[in-house]
Amino acid sequence: MTTAINVEGIDKTYGTHKALRHIEFTINKGEIVTLIGPSGSGKSTLLRHLIGLTKADRQSTGKIEVLGHVLQRQGHLVAQGRDYRRRSGYIFQQFNLVGRLSVMTNVLIGHLGAMPRWRSLAGRFTKKEQKLALKAMERVGIESLANQRANTLSGGQMQRVAIARALVQDAEVIFADEPIASLDPRSAREVMEILQRINHEDGRTVVITLHQVDVARCYCRRAIALKEGGLYYDGPIEGLTDILLQGLYENSGLDEINSSSFSQSRSTTAHTTN
Ligand code: ADP
Ligand code: MG
Image (cartoon, rainbow, N blue to C red; front, side, top):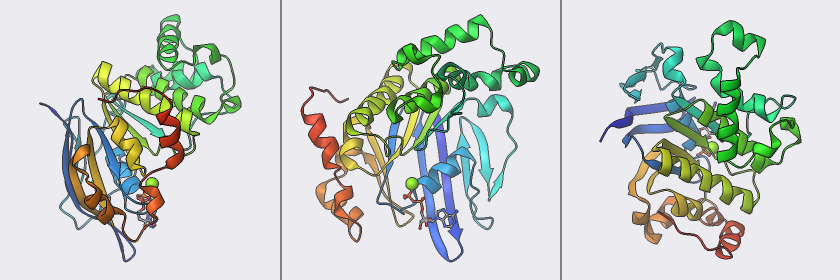
């Protein structure tokens, strides 16, 4: 098996608050993994480290490698080429689309890293690129929205645009931070199913932060659980037993364990998990 992500000894301190405490794990290519834990446990902070948006403590000995390249070491980002960055795709809770541009253009933005700079600045795309974008939109079921402005879409549609963008980019690793937090239960299910499908069918590595265990159980095989910035559990999702979950969520709102609206809406549809 080939390693997609390798994290060694990552610490992160904000003021006096330890947001991450010596985090270590390895994720292989083709895995679908959830980073789980109560609100404030450090999930987003960890994901931002994996993307290179946040640097670990300088005095730490930590290192993060993604797709065989060192991304950061001892709190310093290591310079990366455009080509390497293009191999990771990001999906955020707040969609990150350009609202006044069409769905098609937003999807094609995923291709910018691969285009000559003058052409990307001019916003021109070839027929071949447009075909690629249409194919990605078809895969996530938004091809009929190609010419609509992004700011007229529903949250679920916007999130599918973000996924289509990662597909056009041909990202080998896809990072998603709470991708369903702003969505209604049905859209949440659809977005999770799409993420699961692109993992399954394309073998893309997918890392998703979630705070709802029931959602994680349905779509992710492995869980990395954080509690107060420390690694609390790393293993198969079914190994997160009720007792472990109680320990994970003690002192936090227990309603986070299950998002009941999601569970209820799921139970009305037949669904198989992997
Ligand atoms: P989660 O995503 O699990 O809800 P976060 O990673 O957002 O948790 O936050 C973990 C902890 O780090 C929280 O206590 C949060 O307040 C703190 N934190 C996160 N980002 C910053 C920041 N930029 N400055 C100060 N504290 C931060
Ligand atoms: Mg978060």
